[in-house]
Amino acid sequence: MDTIAISAIKSTSPKYSGVWDLREEILRRPLGLSLRNEDLSRDKEDDIIIAEHDNIVIACLLLHPLEDNNVQLRAMAVYGGWQGKGIGKLLVQSAEKFCMQKGYMKIVLHARKVALGFYSGMGYTTCSDEFTEVGIPHFMMEKFIAAIK
Image (cartoon, rainbow, N blue to C red; front, side, top):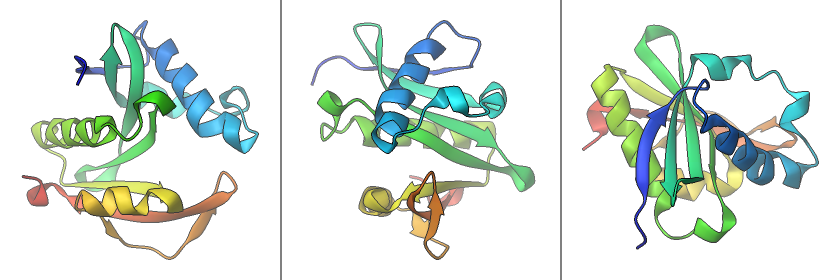
């Protein structure tokens, strides 16, 4: 596999524009939506885990702190040309280690229905009925930090 660099950034990083572009192209444009029409103020509180190849952001996810020492994994995206190559798995594993080091107890996420298998395969369990978010079906999933190896 090509060299992939994983790092944690904040929304103040110059690399955040690459995260924004990735989220726009992969998570919003296919749904006929745009981040331009959304309140992104939560991003300022988040730790953002990115994967880069040749200094270009190719994958990202955001970690939003919640009450009770939990964290929400959100806005995960991988550019199409990099999908199916283990980048998403590498990114989630890196995020889990980051969360462990930060002392979080549990990771929660809203998984698109099409991504249930991906997250289940990484040890996340479904903990809600189906609900609609950004116009498509989702499920709440969780993983306790103690379950991370």
